[in-house]
Structure formats: C-alpha cells, structure tokens
Image 1 (spheres, rainbow, N blue to C red):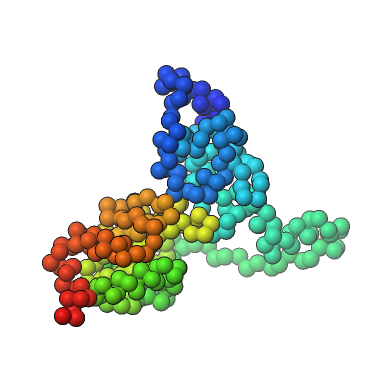
Image 2 (image 1 turned 180 degrees about the horizontal axis):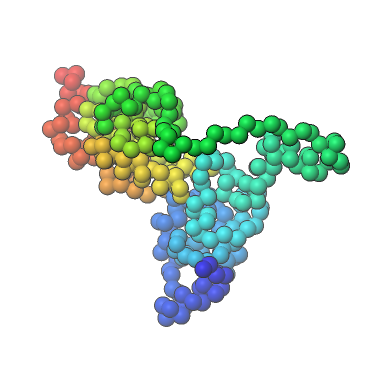
Length: 301
C-alpha cells in the first residue's frame, strides 16, 4: 500500500541499514524516457529526494507540479501509466485532464446546464440515443475493410488501413535507407496470426519484406506521450506478434528512449552514422551475404 514519502524513506533506511538507501542517479535511466515527469517532479516538495533516487515501482505518494502549476499527489506507477489513448498534454495532470473534458463540446454543455439553467423547463432536451445491440458471443470485431485475411501469416502487403507517416524524421529515414538499400517500396503492413486490436495486421514504419525486418522510428513526441507507459507495452506486444510471424524488429529509439528489443538502436536522430549502424544491425540479423546483395551501390555496379 502506498505511503507518504517521509514514512517510505524512513522504512527504506531501516531495511537497508543506511541513511541513503538509494543513491542519486541510481534510477536515472528508468526515468529519462519520461522528460515530462522529470520536469513535473520537484525534490523540494518531496523532502529533498531526487527523482533518480526513486524506483519506478515504489509504492510511495509523491508531489508533482504540472506545467500549468497544478500541484497533485500520485505514485510513480500512476504517473508512468498516464499516457493512454489520449494524445493531449493534459494527460499528464489529473486536474488538466478534468478541465479538458469540461472544455469539450459535450462537457461544456453539461457545465452550462448545471451552472446556468435554473429550471428543468429551461434545460435542453436530452438527445435520443439508440441503444447498442447486445454483443454476440464469438462475433467478429475485426475491421471490415482490412484485406489481411486474404494474406498468409508473415506476408507483407499494402494496407489502406495503415496510418500515414507520423513524422518528417520517419520519412527522412525511409528516403535515406532507400538510397542505401534496395527493397520493395509501398508495403506498410504485415499479416499476423492474432488480432492486433481490430486488425490481423500490424503497421511498421518501414517494411523490408526481402529481409523480413520491420523498422520502427520511436520518439516521445512533442508532449512526451509516445512510446512510454501503456504505449510501450503496446510496442512490446506488436514486436512479439511480428517475431511470431517470422519477422525481426529494429527500433530506432530517440529522445532518451531506452532499447526494448535485442536489436534496437539508440540515436539522436537520422544521420549517416545511424544508417551505417542500421545496416550493420541488419547484417547481424540476416547475415552479411544476404544483406549485401540488396545494397544500392552493389546493384548500380
């Protein structure tokens, strides 16, 4: 059960028999993937204990301050798992998240009815909602427009369901890799054995069907919400499904993101040095002889 930071620190001091149970910087790597939380945390509000002294799984209540100035209490696990489906910066603060709901059209209408309308006669009529049909046991929830079911497990293909490239850096990486390596362009999906949410397909950033390798370009995004917390768990699940289909995954991890797979590369951005490292990693995965057959300069000779 979580406890106050003073009681938690004192208990750890007793159990470890030292006044400094965790040294400064001990958990720096565990927190550096969460730059927003690093900015939200203030040692002066937590008895002088730095964030790098706190294990991510510690059951302790900590004080955080969001960019707006809201001060709130949450455990490390609660904060690290706030990123979900929402991509709003307000996700990191419960007060900001509540205000964001209030500012939505539906939330604003509810606030207007609650704060301005004086009588039921003045209130707008509630919208008529059509009740949803009860779920049928065993009924398919897969996307009806997906063409994945016509593909064999492990096949790469072009899917209309795949999202567009998320960043300019991703497009830059694809363009520079195309200059160095010959692979079929336009493929954006791989058929997997089990549903990934509502599809029997996953959508890597770059699909190299000749080598059966998927490349992902990961950053935390503008608001620090991408590829952390629950989103990291989704990334791991996606990688497992690709490997089960006979593929390998290389993730380019930027913005202090740490590797989550055996072939991941940490890089500050898309550079020539990164391309060299990526080709070397492809050789480790599939072998020098195979990869070198697809090198662009060899094909031009």
